[in-house]
Length: 236
Image (cartoon, rainbow, N blue to C red):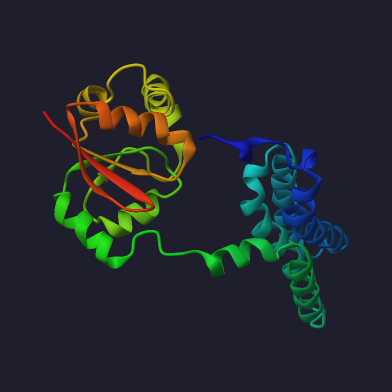
């Protein structure tokens, strides 16, 4: 669950080309201009130094690329303010760069179906009372779950790193329970995580052992299911 976003960006040439080349070029040009103007305009250099620090972290861990992008733009924008032609030229160049190597994420967003269609979201809301704790198998779709089920509580929100740092033992229990349950899982879901409900993606192979164990567990009751999701109630 903590995944490949921690791998160094420099070790992934296609990823470096797609996600890193544009920001690094922007940052390089901005830092060079900021250095030339450092005596009478120190602010661009301050942002350039911050951007260079983010660049080092991004090359060591791809996780930081989303922060590198804005830090790469600011020093160039500040240092090149007198050169009004540079903004449109940069925008055109980056649009061409995105069209050449960055189309796939945009196309995926365009093709993406609604995770919780309104009729199914209404069924979930009718089944799960407000304020109840919901056990989830992963964290990537927690945001969609929170939109479909407002005013409910979820085991993992925002980022699993926060969970792992807060309670490493509990995080390990959650991860192992979802991926390789060693005993009937309902008792652990109810007693350890204080959850009455389990909401998981039914299509992912990694979660199948857990979902099959819930089906066989007499303390778990299947409530709702469709091609994407399955909802269990964990009985006392």
